[in-house]
Image (cartoon, rainbow, N blue to C red; front, top):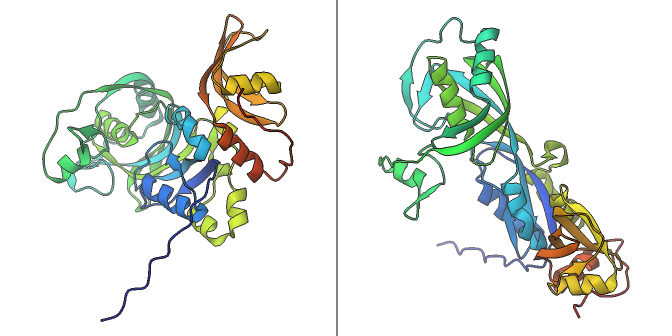
Length: 332
């Protein structure tokens, strides 16, 4: 009997920032996260919204202090590129499922005026029933677990919004009649369900054969790295792929505090100033220059909402190449 090779134990370390991954086909979001976490030897990490294993594209991964702001990306609008094959429905709404129905595609299904009608019909706020093959939980179990066991569970419709929808005739990878879909939508929108609903409206049914997230909360594919590329890098190059935590705070008003106010803000104390009211502010210290946390301003008061710890700030400063800065941010 061959002896099993000893398992290599990874020495974890504090890592802070945001890594934009171009998630590959076949991996779940959590599998992609765990691989990146292992490559970076990071202590703490989380992703910002689930992508199906059959979907590829932008997946922001948060490390260390950045995990405190991951909800901002979870709530952000997202943009997808999908291809829906017409005439065939499946049990999962995508190419993984068993074929349920096959119908001919109406001659006018891909006519410009017909697609324009469909675009109008599916743009705006709407109720959408989540698919059985989804990660939503019912009594502690994911819906896809029930689906695999052949059990149908009643699902309540949820309000979602389609902000932009563009449809065009296409052929899928196997040459079947299809629709090319580019959609910007609210969180919680199921693109598989949208593809099925568009196929039903056309009278022939449809299922997705391609799905790629091309943008989320202003973060696009141009800033992404693949897991294969990350694995081929040395450790310093991997760390250089991390964007600072404030990448997640692009929509926040920036406020910079002097040392005394910065330390008190880090203690959770409100500060008074001449700032205009703002629902979301990113607060920085001036010396050293570092993100302290987020808050909001009302009636001249800066009110803390979510703070970094002094330990996290010191770790970020030490790991930043240009951070040969004096001083600490210990609260007083």
